[in-house]
Structures are given as structure tokens and as C-alpha cells.
Image (cartoon, rainbow, N blue to C red; front, side):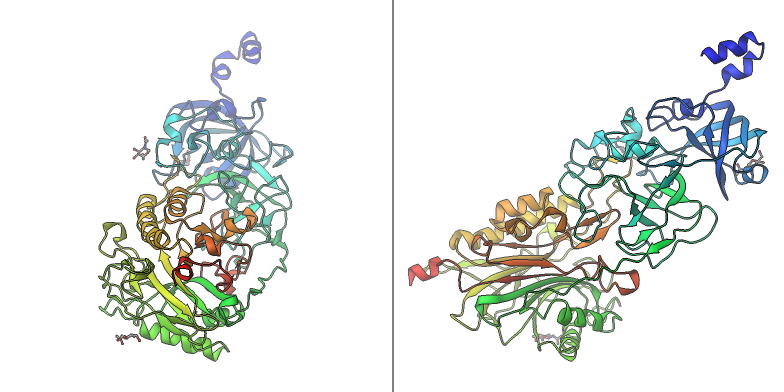
Length: 622
Ligand SMILES: *[C@@H]1O[C@H](CO)[C@@H](O)[C@H](O)[C@H]1NC(C)=O
Ligand SMILES: *[C@@H]1O[C@H](CO)[C@@H](O)[C@H](O)[C@H]1NC(C)=O
Ligand SMILES: *[C@@H]1O[C@H](CO)[C@@H](O)[C@H](O)[C@H]1NC(C)=O
């Protein structure tokens, strides 16, 4: 204001007093107060160029942390007439809010620039070092609009763009990155959090404070902390390409680039391609849990083998991982087993060939000769890749385990918990059999596969298992998106699925509180989110990581966007939730380079002492 008055006195007033600073155009909220308006005489230093525009930084910064001092000017020819280091004035331009999908946040930009004047050239361009020249990124909450929990339900209560809150960059991650949109920044000493996306975009953290760091150095999502301090490095501005070989833990050269919002995420577009400074030497160790062959030390694994068909290129690799990394557990819960003709949609539903091919490959790799137990689904009713008819299945070592009183159900047979009229003990109507296959909650989804087993050596202890693969999070929205809380795809369906599965299990435990029950698989959900807190409450089972007090950071089986996270779990009944049980996640997927990834999930292995469990009602009664 004072400046404008001065100029007025000097007689240059009309144009200059109309001029807005870049901070004023951006404003202190997500959406510009000048959206859709034409603004005149915008002055800025060109800090970077892309093939579609330029980035300019204010020469008259304010001291408000909430307002970005930089902005993107979208025009595919403007870069030809100006150079990085030029201070320019745009005679006029339009303020636009752009996004390519209505669930993404908007990017504030200037379009239709005209009347470009170069004021001076060869000015110094200094990037802002994140965490030094700027605040450090907040480490827990993304926005004030998530009600303190990004996974709270119901989802999609508000849109950031509609509420347009004043940015609090010291408190909320999205506010922090929004307050830097358009800015040229440097990430010092970046560490890669995972393999790049198919577009070679790479999630990193810099040298700032982070929370949730796990045993591999990536960040694990925990209750109320989904890691807004991470940032994705997108396509380089100079047209070079980011490497495809980057993996978790790789140290990268400092990254300088501009902050933008693209494909639903706050993103840094680097000036040039990411360079790997030192490759991580981290390699996933095999499980140390080895079966004792008797009920004293039964081993149980769970693994989503990602669309496994008889001719899958990854078939021998899955087999070799089962032998080498999982040490051939006595019982394997597997998910995403496709039918014998894979993704060909030809009415075939049997997976006998898929499973026998896997079993042969395991024995060729030095493992035992497993048997399998599964129930064929109805064609095209259980979701997943069209034609693939994915299902859950068990592989078991017949030298150690047997199905108790085999009586397989069909796809549509509804399993029931039968109560013995004399002993009061539970058993299954179908062994194996599916839970409530006709219930609408399972539409286009895998029905849980229940079985009862006997450990053949030392006392013939029996136990129940439930192999689950709940509906996926498909249809969800970005954690960086406009919709708050973000849509957790199919959360309502998973909640119903959790309730139905848990109610079935609770009948077993009601009849026999000392029953040994293991429910494992791909729950497609985090243990601290409602579908699974409900599952634990209703079923009476305990999540094994939780029961064993595994550090929360080390509970992960999957790597998605910025987070290491646990979609796969093992839940056990109270008698198995003791410190005698052991549980390990085997990070054959999340720790390795893209070329070494076999499945998108990490498997897990547990070990249980079935002999040592406290006396069950079964024993009292006899
Ligand atoms: C870029 O600006 C030039 C000059 O004003 C104009 O002719 C052209 O249409 C603009 N291009 C885009 C994509 O806006
Ligand atoms: C959020 O935005 C989407 C897309 O524009 C719209 O469909 C939805 O109704 C909005 N939600 C709320 C709660 O306003
Ligand atoms: C698949 O194997 C099961 C169990 O061994 C057998 O009962 C069933 O008939 C087989 N199905 C086909 C189509 O071969």
C-alpha cells in the first residue's frame, strides 16, 4: 500500500496500483480469490520452464507462510521468449484453477498471458530448501477437513475446494504443499520410499523430520498418521526420464524442481531426472520360523500371489519364494488363484491345474508335496480380473496336517457352525466350505473359505481357519485429493463382509472359547480402520501383530502411494494370541527393485504351539 502511494505521487499510479503480487493472486487458501479474473501487470522471476509453460516467483514477497510466492504460467510458447533468470512482467493473464478429474485438488495457474516484458535478465535463481528456507512438512494430518482421522467414516463429507480453508502449513500436509505450489524447491538428501510408478514417478522423503519410519526406512501408515511429509517426484521438466531401477532405501542426489499438483497429488517436477547416489543394500531375509512338523510348532503362511494362473510367468518365482523365503509352511492361505485358463473368459472355473502346477513347482524347488483345498466359485461371480475367477485356496503339507472329516461344499453351499448335541463343541457343516455365499455383501467378491484341520502328530489337535480376500479399495480417491475424508473404496462392503465373517467365527468361539481359530488373508484394509476394528470386536479374534506388540511401524505387507501399509493380516483366537506365537512379514515385494517384484503383496508367516494351548472345553467334557 505504501509503495502504491509512492508511485501515485510519482505519477505512474494507474497501472501499478492495479498490479497484484503473486502472493495476492494465490491468496492464503487453496482456491485463488481471483479465480477466473483477468489480472494485470504481474511481475516475477522466471525460475523454471517446462514444455507447456513457465514458473515465476514474486519479486515482492510477503511474510505470510500460507501464500505461495510463485505461480505457474500455462502457455506453450511463452518459454521460447523468456529465460530462467529473467524478471518479467505479464501485461495481463487470467487466473485459472485447473484439475483433470473432479476428485483432484485444483492447481492455481495463470493462463492467456499477454504483453510479456523482460525487465532484466541473468538474475540469480535460488531454490528454497525444504525444511530450511521453508517450514518442514507436517508429519501426520493432511487437512483440517479429515476430522482428525483420514479413515473416518462416512467418507466424502466435504470438498476442500468448496470449504476453501485458510492454509495452516505448519499443521496440515496438504496446506504445506499448497503453500509452495509453483515454487522452485530443493529436497536435500532424498531417500526413495519404494519402486517408481509405471510413469517412473518416485515417492521420497528429504532430510526433514519424519514419523512412522519402519525397519526398511520407508514410512508406515499408522492410525491417524498417513505420512503427508512424503512427496512424489514426477516427470522431469527437461524431458529426461526418471530411472526405473530405484527402490526403497536408495539414496538420491538432491532434487530441485517445482511444486505442482498433478494426477491427484502434490508433486515436485524435477528440473532433470532423479539420480541415484547410492543403491540400498537392504535385502529381505527369509522367515526364521521353521515348522517342527508337529503341533508344537505348526507354521502358517498367507500370501496374495497376484493373479496366478498355470502359465503365469511368475509361477516358478512364487514357488521358489514359498520354499526359500517362507520355509514351506505347513499351511498356506493363498489368495488370487485364477482358474485353469487364467484370464481367458471361457466358463472354466476349476483351479485344479493352477494349484497342481504350483504344487509341482514347489516340490521341484525343494519344498514338500502339498495338497490343496478350495471351493470353485460360480463363473464370473467373485470379481477380480475378468475371466480369471480368482479364489482363495489352502495348500497344506499332508505329512503334518489333514482336513478333518472332509465334506467339501459347493460354490453356493452355505457353511454353518454345527454344535454337537452331546459335547456342545463346534464343527463345520462343509469342510471346506464358504461363508454366506448368497449374501449380497459378497457381490463380485471372494467368499471366505472356512476349514477345520487336524495336526497329525502329538495329540491330533484340531483348529479352524478362515481364508479371506475382501473387496479391494478400487474406486477410492487420493489421500491428496479434494474429497475429505478421501473415499476409501468399497469400505461399506468390507464392513459388511467383516461383520458376516466375524459373526460366523463368533459362533465357533461361543461354543468353544478355547477353540483355535486363524483367520488370515488379504483383508484389503488396515487393522485400525472400522471394517477391521469391527471384525476383531465381533469375532473375538485378535490381530496377531497387535497381540504380539510388533512395533506399529513394522506392520506392513504392501506399498501403496506414499505408505507402507498392512492389507494382509492374521487374526487368531485368544488361545493363540499368546507370546508363544510368532509372526513375521517377509518383505519380498516391498523391499526389492521392480525387476524383482513377484507379487504386489508381501507374504507373512506365523508359528503356533497347538499342543501347549490351555485346555479346551473339549478336554473338560471328555
Ligand atoms: C500462448 O501465448 C501465445 C501468445 O499470446 C498465444 O498465441 C497462444 O495461443 C498461447 N498458447 C496457449 C496454449 O495458450
Ligand atoms: C465434492 O465434489 C464432487 C465433484 O465435484 C461432487 O460430486 C460432490 O457432491 C462434492 N461433495 C460435497 C460433499 O460437496
Ligand atoms: C478338482 O480337484 C478336486 C479335488 O481333488 C476334485 O474333486 C474335482 O473333481 C477336480 N475338478 C476338476 C474339474 O477336475
